Length: 114
Length: 242
Figure 1: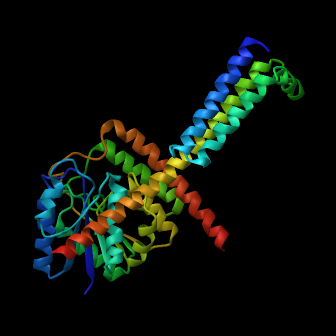
Figure 2: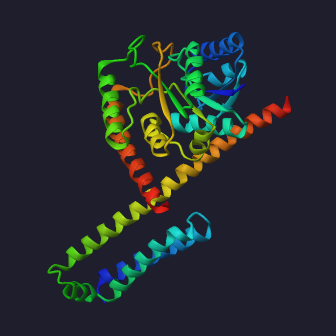
């Protein structure tokens, strides 16, 4: 096993451990952690199976294996960013509704206490 | 007698808000109209909250800044929940004189309009705003005609009245940022009867416009996008229903 493989596996495992810790502490919700766990598993898989990338690139008809990595990674990042934008939009509208509800309730409360 | 909610969105309007609220209350008294002033304080950083608490009005204080659309919608929800017949939106900076309110209300009652917009550009009297601003307003007029066929001369005017039928819709959905032109498209596609009444406006009595020069390009772009998406969304929905 090459040195870089050992480093890659160690870093991936450390990353996985950190994500699990975040979930346990309640700082990361499970639904948002799935993508991170899948990414780490892919990383670990290719750290063990060094030729895997070449094999995959060949079957897909990509001449340079690193290009496949960049294409795949950038695509995954874009999709995840879109997902986050959707989450933010949803939070935005829920936040607005809550604020309006608070303003109306505050008024109700002041009226009753007079 | 119709109950009217005068919704005044206010963001950092400590200088002008007292004048606006007193102006409306004085009119209600002299004309024997049932108007309640509802000031929506959009989390102002100045003493607006303090000023309005001493005025004769219903104060709705938002805990966070929502922008003009979110603030006005808070007022719409209040008006709907409390059984008002009409909601009339009046800017908090003193641009809209209360003396024009009866004209707008009468237009709604006499002509059976669901929405009445107070327009600066029918008789071209009073404050007309800058040439650049008017160019934008003409662009929206053109876009409106192109998409829904209705002609609204002053689609950016915030001086407008809606009835209960419309209140039920806008309490559910109302655009956040720069809502005025987009709301008109929404109203047209709901087949509400829209009327326009000539009013005289004044220059703002205090505070700064919500749209600066740099923001105006963004404004045009954002509103155009919003209009096109609202149009597509509602057209599609209708087809699904029928």
